[in-house]
View 1: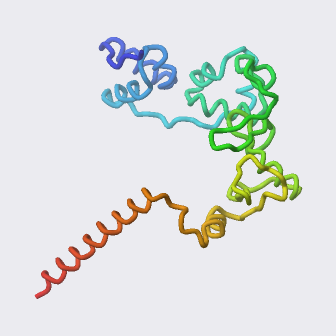
View 2 (view 1 turned 180 degrees about the vertical axis):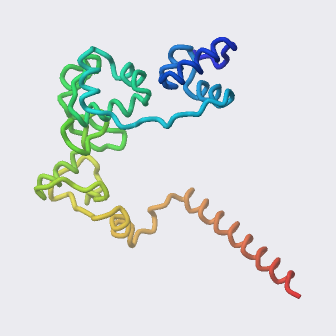
View 3 (view 1 turned 90 degrees about the horizontal axis):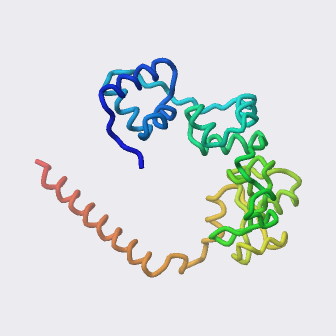
Length: 224
């Protein structure tokens, strides 16, 4: 567990190291504290905080991966979050021996899995819209194959029968935006909000009505 207190000698040492070019993530690992603790001590000592560098160069990542560093070690070396490194590694298709992905992972299920919402996920690490683990929702892949192009991020693929795992092409329809999707799918529905949701909405409406009435009364009383 990380501590949050440093001695005066350690604070002086971290200030010198930070001015010499070390970053907060590296110093946090060195002194056994969190990066926010490092930043707090630096601010107290009047040391200007450098902006975090989020851009990661492909050649730099390839070199560090070739050295055998894990994504966590690379993140500490570069002073960025581990998620940033993982996304860039996937985007640049850089293999990391510490990150057992795909068929090298003991939990590999053939590149096909299902999330908690019932959507089928397909392992496509080369896809431009793949998540950090290299997966893409199957219904979007099916629609892309039908259209012959990649989908835009704002486009929504809807299941006509509302079954998230039924990715038959005839069961899918495309909407340009989520607003358009909601406008079509919710039109005419009276039960898309649960009874508990209705009660909450009604309570909010009553509070808003009382607030508006009180505001009107205050304005009326303030008139000469």
